[in-house]
Image (tube, rainbow, N blue to C red; front, side, top):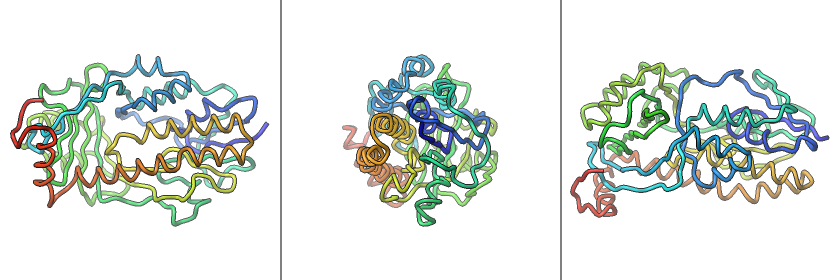
Length: 346
């Protein structure tokens, strides 16, 4: 039986541990935190990610815990609709629920190790599922692979109220973004992003919320209502980090999955989806092929696809958070939405 160490017990790490053949691998999952964050956030599960969840065996449970994502209105900073889009078949699910279901799917044969990983586990294959600041990536791929700090602050949270009538969607202002979508149990998930010098670490959530209210309040009724109800205890505030192109997702006896491989801006809502697809793809090839061939196959299947999404997400961030070109952007989006420059209801 081959030793396999998964560094990181988040979405990618748990999904991988759940899918690996326990008769072929002696798996240990290393997780720095014994408990997950108590602050809820919401994730969109696109069809390919749902296929991965089906491979793990938890898709029915995710559907039961989640809700239909439906569609979204894209608005200007004042709340006027620029265009609308549908997202048929997309499920919205709480990150906490997804992690709970993935954790329950991990076989009892998988060993758990809690605490910070100071050096890479040996012997055997090491899987870096430890996020944008991956110690696996830095140790094997070198210091040039360190995560890169973007100029953007990202906030997100849940309020115990339904989406304001006529206020759902994503608001693109001048250099700032605000999103309002349904969450489970009739609640609202919200998120915001803009340039900020706060951080990069140890950001005070109360200070970040106050800054967000000062910047965004008074422009759109939907945003005002959500920010009035938002509390520090039910919100997160973090700077956005991205991962540079590593050249390959496998090197020596190490392989990268999820944000450790392709950490991207959140603007396409694909980070968690791609982490699930990475994990299931890697498990399939490891379960069926010799190790070197399996790692090469994983790299071929996932490198270009996930890197293309990373680049596209960065492009979407630049578009959504445009400053000097914001009027031109909004005009083009109105034309694309067939509104001819006129605002309309969602």
